[in-house]
Image (cartoon, rainbow, N blue to C red; front, side, top):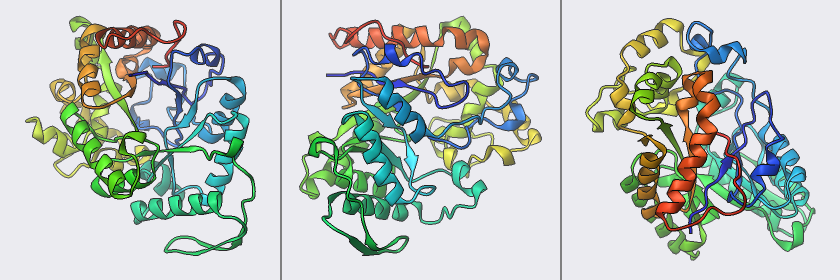
Length: 382
């Protein structure tokens, strides 16, 4: 069975009023991002490039994802609340362990601790050590599990963390620790996720075939660790562009939509026959640092960005067409999708219609899979 997830944006202005609708039973879970910085370059977040800048002075007005998750936990009754995802660079694992237990009690067992190894933009500008992020991530997971599961004080000496007579005596809600979902893409991260995760998001499964390959690797790692591979929930955050042919032509001219190319590695475009406007060594999200991307570099990038290159990577078209493309991911094993429509980045007019397009796409996807939408009509934050 497939059930879509919803996003709750953690940027200002914060809209908690929609939680009642998101708690209706339609959605598998509500996912909350945890950023200091957005992917959108400062240089083009101006009225010259987008009318979105007329209603928000910055794309980086982020609130703390864990704090918002705690608020969502007490304002809902049914739907799980997940961070999507928190990095293990900015927060010590002892704090993550305690905060996760706290929110799980507030939600009465509905919290999902979504974790990842981190990104440059949220760490390097603030002076955090971003070396060896995967090794740090694995050690963080070990410390979290030790603090949760050990009776009495914990002693631990690792490469990144040292604990001496460290205590976390707070018991889990009703005897069960929060679920851990992991954002994982490369071989090492997939192996770690197979050993630790209760749910999984890939970061960079651009096709159903890639998704299926990564899911197989994840499940192999789970089997080797003596875990039930089918006990890990396969999820997906998939950016798409929803619109008819005429709308897509206009959407692809928008600077912020073109700037999505920043999130795509050069190798991914090269495999589809396109050159990346930032060069063959661009690694996608790991290279983004919006404050350091100058206006000149971004304007040049936009001038050399081919809309066809973006369409080669993301599902696009009418809600019916996008639903068919998502169905292929479902057939590859995906069970919980978040349909993330970037057409709203084309401007206020498109943003106003984006949520309705997402709901229509979700309904069509469920229809294609011979499923009826759960709960009420719901509302999706695009």
